[in-house]
Amino acid sequence: MSKHNDPEAIPNFLAEQRDEAPAEVQHVFLTLEDQWDRKLWHQLTDTLLEYFPTEESKSQRLPIYNTFILSFADKINQLKLVKLAISASSQCKGWSAGPSPNAHANFM
Image 1 (cartoon, rainbow, N blue to C red):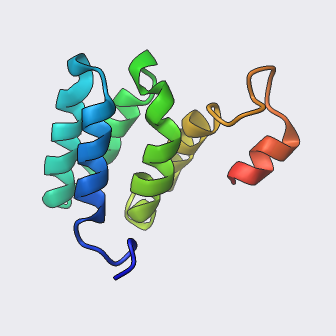
Image 2 (cartoon, one colour):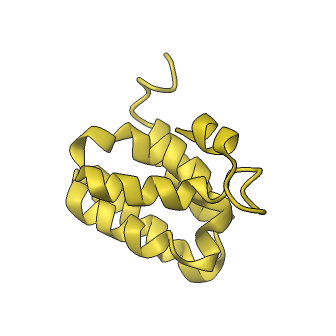
Image 3 (cartoon, rainbow, N blue to C red):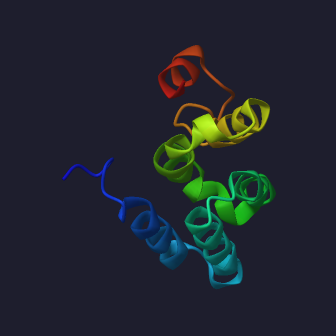
């Protein structure tokens, strides 16, 4: 069974991210897991929009965006999706000295 079709792929991913997160933000992942299970797309998006600007989220933004957010991107407000994408893309290699067209294009 492919990872995309595995019903446990997202819960497992969130559990892994929770374990890697600093203790003070692990509650965010418990909230995300609950909202995912209950299919609360609006609330889930808002939780992510609150978490992404934090310093603790930096190392997790790209994996969360690529694995988690894209799995339900068609169910959320597209402007909020763009906000999350911009925040995640700031972690792309090559952006430390400012965004390069290649890094941005590769991300999108």
